Length: 111
Picture 1 (spheres, rainbow, N blue to C red):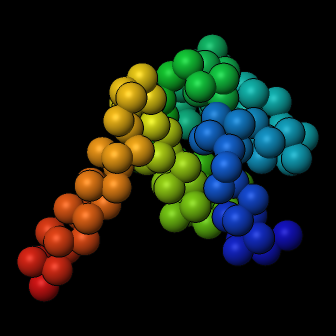
Picture 2: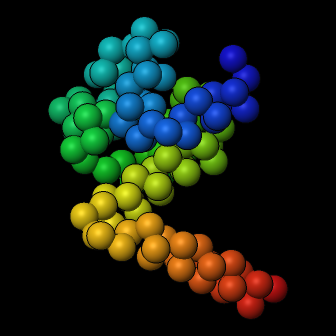
């Protein structure tokens, strides 16, 4: 499977689900992936279950380890951070639309 196809398949999954799927597809035990990241297997398990957040460096490292699109995994990681921050807000979608416009504005202002 190409990196492009893999990046498309992770769009609606959270990072943990994606990592678990990648690990299982390679038939790797949790402890092997945890050892690669130099973390306790219990922490890796919590990341896969969405109970703990990976950091940016871990996500980049995992993209290389699983040979998948780095940006695809980073998008899943960042979207998880955003979703869990605004999930309980009634006006979350409205706030996200405003944030999107704000990001576009700030990026054009930088150029």
